[in-house]
Image (cartoon, rainbow, N blue to C red; front, side, top):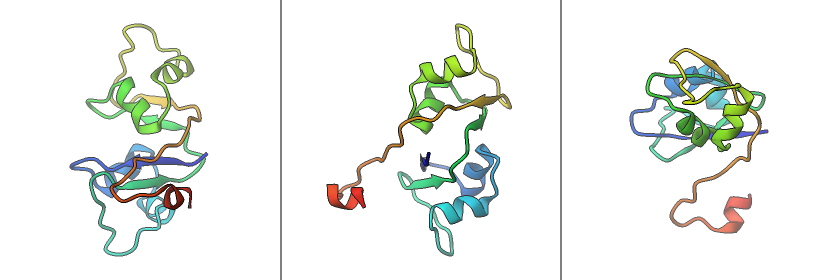
Amino acid sequence: MQFFYTVRPGDTLYQIARRWELPVESVIAASNLTPPYTIFVRQQLSIPPGVNAYRVQPGDSVNRISQIYGVPSTVIIEANRLQPPYVIQAGQLLNIPPGVPYYVVQSGDTLFQIAG
């Protein structure tokens, strides 16, 4: 299953690749980026298939991670046997079950373009 990540303010390719413990080159290739590899806020980057784990970053929450992957937070909670109040720690590795990929509609998009 293909995952997409929406670039947020302050993100860099290096940070995004590090979240999934991937080489930056893998994210560049999967997202069809060309030099100078500039990314923009709200841009959709493709995360190579087969990624099913996430290393928790400082400030993360189960809800935030569920939004990144497009899966309900309950799916992450159950897959990792988290107990209330569902506290996670920076550096913790979470299993992320396959979810439903999503796309953030951009101004000017058409259904035909999105389907392509």
